[in-house]
Image (cartoon, rainbow, N blue to C red; front, side, top):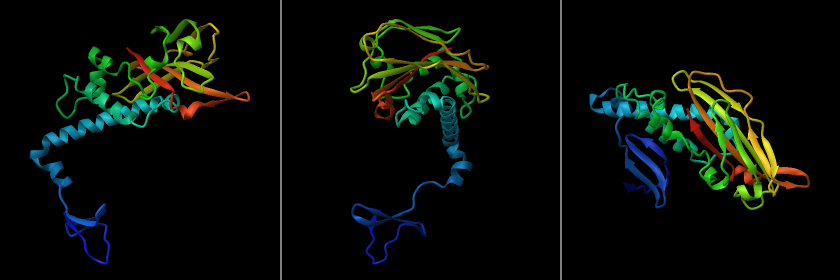
Length: 249
C-alpha cells in the first residue's frame, strides 16, 4: 500500500493498480485476487466452485421462503434475517446424504427429522423472540393449522413493549417445495385485543390447509400497537413484533 501524492485524485483501477480514498488520504495498491475465469475453469478451484454453487442454492432457498411469507413478515423481521436464514439453509443442505458435493439440496435435507428440527423455532425478528413475548401455553392442531390458547389474559400472558395498548395475533401454514419452488400460504383471521385483564379463548384458524407436495411450516405472529384517539398505530414500525416457525412437518 502506498500514499498517492498528486494534485490529481484518482479512484478506481488503472493498469493493475487500485486507487481509493482512505482515512489517511488517497492510497494505491496493486490489484490482487484470483481472476473469475481461473476460478471457473482451473481444476485447483473445484472445491471453490462446489462451495459457491451450494451457497447460491442456499441463498435462493432462503429467498424463496421469505418471499412466500413476505406480506406476513413485512412488519416482523430484523435487518439480518436474510443472512441468518441462509445459514440455517446451509445446515439443512448439509443433511442431504444422497447428492454429490456441489449439488446438495435444501429440499432433500429438509425431509429428514434433523432438517426439520434445524429450522423449527426460527425467529424472523431476533429483536422480539416469541418465547420472550408469549408467556402462555398454546396448542397446535397440525391437521387444521389451528392454534389455540385457552384462558388467554393479555396483561398476564404477554410481555409487551412499553407503550403498547393493543395486540394482534395470527397464525399461518405454508406449504413449500424447495425442489419445484411451489408454495401456498394460508393465514388465519387476525385477532386484535386490548392489553387488559379480559380473559379470552384465543383461537386462530387458517381458512384451509395449504395445497402442495412440499413441507408444511406452521407460523405464529404477534404484533403490537398503540391506540391514540381511537386509531391503532404500529408500535415503533414493528420493531417489537414476533414471528416464529413453531412447527415443521
